[in-house]
Length: 269
Image (cartoon, rainbow, N blue to C red; front, side, top):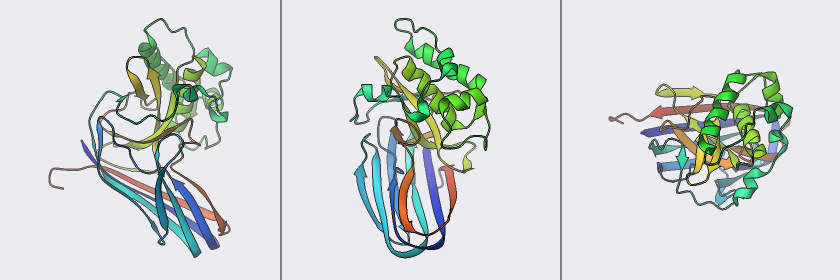
């Protein structure tokens, strides 16, 4: 499936800023089942955008805007071809040892509720265990916006019984790591009914299964990623995988607007 994406992030400041710097994880990587036809990251006003990679191997751009400005628009757009590989992720250049993805972070620290999710993993049964875990979490945590935020931990979201895709992924990752299964947080885009105007990125998790490699689990939708998913970046949790993170000098109060358009390309396009 060929998917067209346009993602605009706009910052509006109450006073003049003199310098802005942002790290941008807004570029999909090519691997088996995902090929980037074209992609570009730009900004307004014109700034310097330097491609690099972060410590987890993700494609990253460092953007700097110098001189007086009161708004910044960051635009990521392009076309990606996706094949349904049933969530299996192969062909990425892995730069981080597996043991790193057993590390517990503040957002994924397991509490008693998460430990209660765990059941023994029989020899050779890691994949069925992961599917059961995904369904169990989705059954206990309803999808509901506006009730959690970027600082909500996995344990807090599970206890509350509601949250968004970020929370579902953090709970899954927390449980996996507690069971000594390497797991990581993934950001990307999801095509819903052909055209989707989403407020932000989608997020899911990946777990490592011996003999198969990394496999994606979208707990929010209780499925493994299909050809409707465009994978962007992966890291320990939402903080480390944040699509945009940075700082500025001046600017006063900030107002953020995000527009994402995800569309299947028709034969006529």
